[in-house]
Image 1 (cartoon, rainbow, N blue to C red):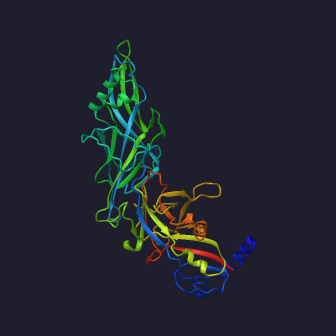
Image 2: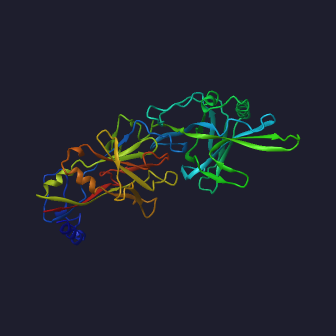
Image 3: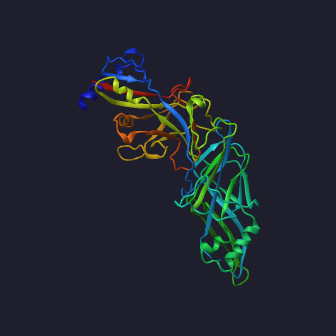
Length: 445
């Protein structure tokens, strides 16, 4: 029977037209014709909504996300990064003659990533933490986690971002009095553990300027090999000491490495006067209330929820129905993206339960997570779309299995753990300009 079904599908698929009224089925209506064994249905109702998670885990990713954007679609979103540092050593070389020089915070760009307007000045400020960072009971830190930092800035930098430039990094000179006190603490020889060290230096907060219009991502662990020294994302102390002859000088460095377990991105949002002003984790918004649109924003957990409420109606078409193929075409709303807020190059999709908790990702036959690639002739035209298979999902939903009750698809512009800002606005099945739809091929017999 399997070969029979595939054979019919290949022969007749090109003959089936959604413009032919004999092959058109409106889900939820009381009529359907069954002239053809292979039927194309592209009028199934899609139910879309915009949902928001309570919080998103942002620790342990080795990614420092900093920046801010503000517009009338998503409102204001701002990300700061907070972290502990750990001395590579609890001692100073030649401490009897050692002299402090400077303290610097280096940041290396991650994956050439940026989002927003990088042609405008970007400002970052550094503040010392006043409270120690404490993990949640599950060992994670979230975008909503809050720890107090000082109002006294100890360093800043204003620059034009160049994240795609080879071997590019930032160098932020930190306050000399702060650096000297840190040097003197290590020099005493009393510091012998991280626990002791944290009593005096609890960590740093990296905060974007209030007028920034972009997000940047810096990696922890990647190294840039330069002629004079290797640069990585680290706080580095420079000092020197005189030799016994009293004239020769030797230069030294001491690195304070970022503890990735105690590093996280604190991401704040304000949807006031935006299209999402009524969205909260407890108040999802259906696409009709948003002008037949649905939204996604990574790193703060805004997903598009997709349901096919009338899928079981196709079982009434024939005594026996088999789903051959089903694809969902998701179309970005023209005008919601531009060169600054570019379309995600791919989407991820997940299977969720009735509480919107992610159950699993969709995987290939080899077990790899499947992503949905953007298809377009020109990114800035209105024919862009993402197409992905719903065949297995719809087969499960029509199998009358109790385990499938309440399950839906969640769309997201990154993996749900990734610390990069991406956003997307899509049209639902009733959007007048960018209509998303399902193309379903079935065999009735």
